[in-house]
Image (tube, rainbow, N blue to C red; front, side, top):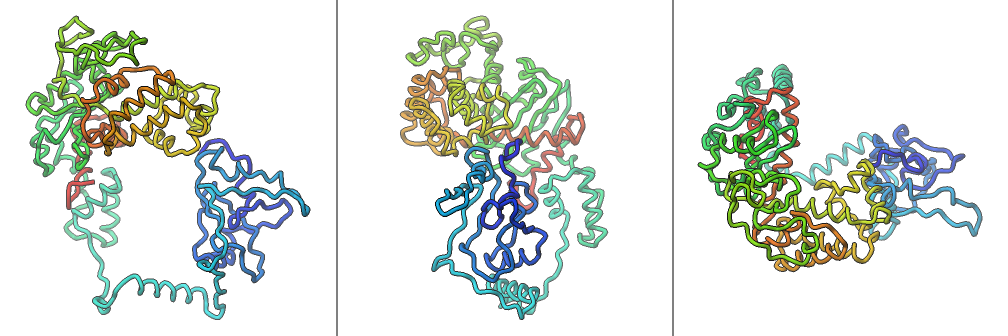
Length: 542
């Protein structure tokens, strides 16, 4: 939810019906009134909730002690608002329009996802019968709970069998520690407490978590600021899976702070396996060459995926805004007039140093380079937002939809995957666009759903061509990634979701926790501890 406050406070409205509570009217605290909570559960069949949330009302105007039925069978349901313009009940309702009298205009109370309107009584939802006050509430609740348990479970086979406690063994405890993501010290503390309470198997040792990294840390070495796997086949064997290079691809990503290499399984059946990591090497050609040499890439020959900056290093191309940045053809990035009119550019048949922006010898075969669907998706939304009128309703709507993003980021079109998904699912955003912008947006959504994911439509070629045509009409700039999508569609895999680099991007978020734990000691112990957290005793799956 936005950091700024709502126009009207949440406690100015009734928790049950959602109506505005007049200033002089008496408020009844929902959380403090036991009778109120009891009556609410008896009438609606659900307990009072969300009283610990700031976006839900904490008072009601309903309960006054009268024995009368409500006008509705289902109360107003509250959810956390997503924005202040279209999905915030406390900003959309205007109590100032409330007037008294026969001909007064009533206040409009909307029915939106964050505040679902009450449902009236009907034959399917009749008025409930009042509870029998002769039966104590505790006895009544226990009797109803017992009846629900009898209906949900069958005790015919175990009526006489007593429940016996289960004492977890070492494998069970390890899986619990992995699921909770505990550090070694916290895992040792948990084991000690459970051991003290006699809730664990006697064979479990409290200090067993201190050396949990040693199982896999022996497969890693640290040299020249790079921590890398010195025996990939042995690591796979220790984990218990088959080392088939054709089923894995190597994801390499770099920034000004780190250089990481991760093995991604084609189809995402197994989790991502880190094989190299460094925070000391610079983002340059020599560092990538050192990394591939340490991993013995020539022996395994994985397919490689990464952003196009990393692809430039792998192909030995010069960085920056060069004339021929494409590693497949000699696309002229500076001939902007021909970008949307020409597609048959000369193919790049050789990588000669000093010719056509080739600066070094290629490190991998160009046929081993995979197209990154996530990077192309980010580029498409980036160029679309850049082409929007910055004074239009659509651009202002994006600012309201992401109030915590800076205006500079929104102008530059810098969004991440979850934010793009949120824009696509928003039904109000296309209504803010003009005719050309709406056509380009619909084409973008069609390409995302019909080509850049797990599903590939039969007419995906037509979808991409329509996208390029609408982007040209809107005035979007053609970048290298859009050119790859336009001119080299045959280079993409059948299932882009199975060969996506998104799993590698998620690895960055996971490894950050381990980097904080080890406080700058990015060595083989950290890598071994991370891989230990991926294993499950029953099956290697997450």
